[in-house]
Image (cartoon, rainbow, N blue to C red; front, side, top):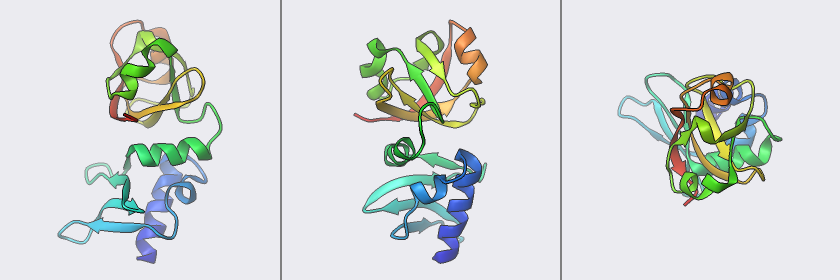
Length: 152
C-alpha cells in the first residue's frame, strides 16, 4: 500500500504542482483496485478523493479532492473564477460558459483538472477545462469548463 500512496502522490504533484500529493492523500488513504491490480479510486475517511483514469494515467478529482487542493494552494492557482451571479448554477453541477469567466489561473490549459470558484474564492465545483486560460478570457461564447461535480 505504501507504493500506491507514493505513486498517487507523485502523479498529483506532477498534475497539480508541488505539494498537491501530500495535501490530497494522507497516510490513511485506501485504494480501490481494478481486477488487474491497478489503482482506480483513492478514498479517505469513506469519501472518494480522486479517481486514477486508465486512459491518461492522471487524476480526476472529486469535490472532496477539490476542497483539499483549494485549502492547500493560494488563489489563483488551479482556479477558474466565475461571476457571483452564476455561482448557484455552477454549484449545482452546470457547465461554466466562457462569458461568465472573470479570472483564471494563467497556467491552465485545455483538459486540465481545475477548481471553479466565485469572486470571493469560495469553492463551487471541480471539472475539466475545455479551453486554455487565454481562450476562457477572450471568448464570449461556448463552454469553458465541463463541471464534473458541484458542491451541492
